[in-house]
Length: 302
Image 1 (tube, rainbow, N blue to C red):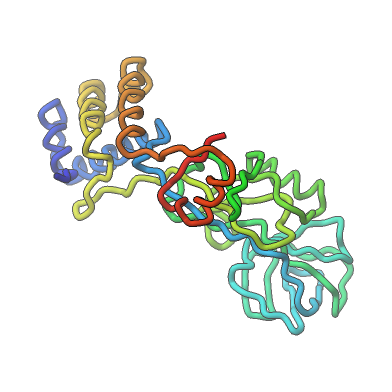
Image 2: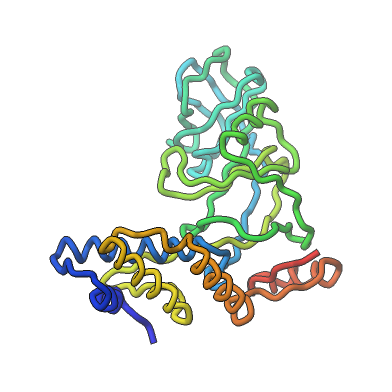
């Protein structure tokens, strides 16, 4: 049986929450959602684990481009698309720099995030390199390894977004098989979306598969909390202790040794009752992944 924010408010009232004004209810609901997010982030819960499929795109170089010392790129015989926003523009005539595309305008017009500062010219060869990959809207963080379409594990090194930018600059927008990945939210023109950034830029199309931890759905008057019902006792315990400390202000209960032990026990139970099963890497694993068993959230072990 599902439970609601009103149920949580009732539980809070039993343990000291008293502000039932309109503002107090809004504050309590925001606090309850924050508690659910904190619990979900405390472990890589199988209950929040989902699969992703990322398509790496080969560089686009159809037609030619005219560059001027401003942010506008003008294409000739090009078919540029909206998905090029956030990707890299590489011009062989100005190969010491890496430019990022801020906005798609038309199939023959793009805007850079900064003015082009190379030599102005018409009819130049170029490449648009796909380094930014859109993640699912509920993506919170990656969990587990990543694999290509054949089932082979990919040895990505995870780096910060700052380190990724440094790699792109030092290697002048290099293309090859990606070896580094950064996870981030935000980007030119789409600040609310979530992305992965790869280096080097893909030199050919391929598929990456893996699993991620999903962000809990925000509970509202019409949307029930999605913290698992079987672990509602953890939410109740956290609520009860933190209401007692500061009437809804929080008291660091989640970080205590006692609560960490409870989280460990619940996590093991989640793995046993709903977590992914493990198979050994090899020919059978590869065949299973190719057969789309990956959609059942397999965790491939070495």
